[in-house]
Image (cartoon, rainbow, N blue to C red; front, side):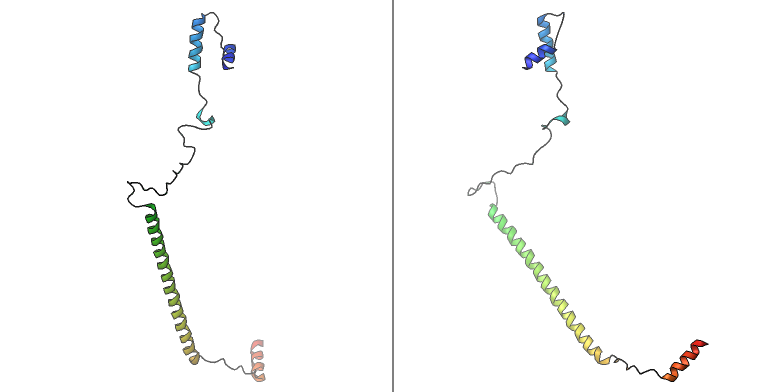
Amino acid sequence: QDGQVDDLFIVFEGSSSEDGSHARQLWKSIALLPPLESRLASADIRQRLPVARPQRRGTSHVDDPVPLTVCSERQREDERRRYQAMADQKKEVMALLGRQRQQRIQRERLSAAVKPKNKVVEPPDPETELDKELVRQL
């Protein structure tokens, strides 16, 4: 179909058929490609993430210095140590807070004996109330 369409739209009047075929080949060879933005995929742009290679189980490579299981075991052990250190630090902090609380309670008990007790409020004396009222009126 493409040949038929090209023959319909490419016309070389007044030239030999040999010149026409050469011209037709020239125009076909220099046909412009669509702009890069209009293409669905481009060779120079990475469209996909790299695919992980399938892991072979049971076979070890000569160039691998440490097998994968040993590395993962070391990583797990390091993680366990880190979590254990965090747990120990938390226990120390909780113990310190507990000691500080006990000290605060002891200080409050000691100071409770020294603190003045609530004063007993005496009923107002009518004579002093009358004096206060007279002072206000002045």
